Image 1 (cartoon, rainbow, N blue to C red):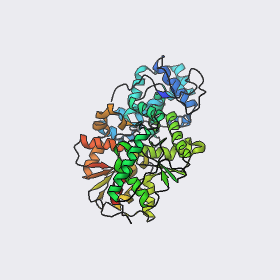
Image 2: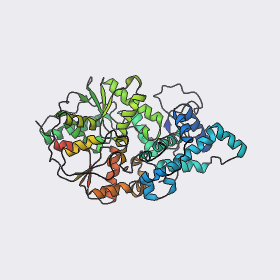
Image 3: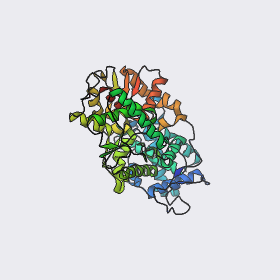
Image 4: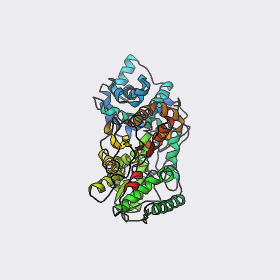
Amino acid sequence: MREQPVVDWIFHEPPPVIAKTPVKAPRAHYHIIDPPKEGRVAMFLRAFAAVLKYSSYKGMLDAYSRLSTGCARCSAACHIYRATGDDKDIPCYRTYLLLDIYRRYFTLEGQVKSLVLGGRELCEADIDLLAESFYRCNACRRCSLECPMGIDQGLMTHLGRYILSEMGIVPKALRLSTIREMESQTHTTTAMPAPALEDFIVFLEKELLRLTGRPIRFPVDEPGREFIFFAPASDFIMEAETLMGHAALMHAVGYQDRWTIGTHDCDAMNFGLYYNDWVLDHVVCQLCGEADRLRAQKIMIGECGHAARTAKEFVPVFGRDLKRPAISSIEFAAQMLQAGKLKLDPRAIQQRVTYHDPCNIARSGWIIEQPRQLLRAMAPNFVEMTPHGRWNYCCGGGGGAASIDEIHDYRMEIAGKVKAEQLKATGADLVVAPCAECKKQLRELVKHYSLNMEVVGLNDLLLKAIRWE
């Protein structure tokens, strides 16, 4: 990992306390600001103060700052610490870094102590340490399951990144993806234009006709449907089978006229979850706005862990009067199977299959059994990783790391080492990973460690297993 992932400018809307003049633009308007002229320490403290003033993080920090945060029990759960053995990779270490600054500069007790007794001041080297530490973490939140005090170390990582981003420190890959999602015609992280999207959909429909013999369609910009479907933009470039599997599913269960894709916003991904709440808010509003434009009743998210979690948890928070119920396509498929509407060939997939639980949908216990119900209904040679479910290990690309090619070696040799060991132990031929970021990371791990297996999506297998009436 690079020692100082600093960029010259950042794409965001600065809170009024940071802005030189009050920002009167609508909340959906974002600005490119000039590089900060003052020292980074002062900028960090001003950004920290702004986040505390204009968000609800202060209550969490007040509670955490009164708890013991140094027992290091979380180290037993961290795949990165397991790979390095470095004390700096213990989750509560980076939490302590941020809490120590909070106690010193933003509590009355800390300010009085510094005046009376003196104390260590924040310095430029500390900013580099914070940036390095918070971007070594995958924010998978596995450590939170071990913490006896209930501290959410992943949320602390997000807060640290949020503060750093408000002063201009954010990996280039995340910044560029955010800009494309905000400014491109179709609001996608790949900046795919609408004509290319429509051409690709025509290609998929022809392939589905060839494979199934049925006129399966991808409805586009159809108003008044029950579901508006958002898939990761990368699926429209690299995951044709995943998208075809979803369309086949909707057709097989009689929902072919009850869903649509929107051309004004077809990307489920929300990079704000990785580093900045202003971006998170804005992209959620874009997604809800597209659902409102097409008068869709519900939001359905395709195979993407962080996108599904973003819709499930943050559409109700940031969606305002445009919010709608959100569901994962995995949940929907499992519901159709249980209702008897989805018929699967129980021996369709003969290879040895294992399942990787994306952290964002499994860590809370939300989506664990649903994909397994589907896999057991079509893959007789299904095997589990150890551990799995809520206790799964991150793929090593979580927290946006999979999108940062500059840290490829770190992702392979450190962050992804434990997951590679898990994959090898299963002896599986197919690894099912219903998440765009996980697929990218796992495929690179398979190549790096020369594992004889293929990474696929859950819908890829459904496409092969559906029994057509």
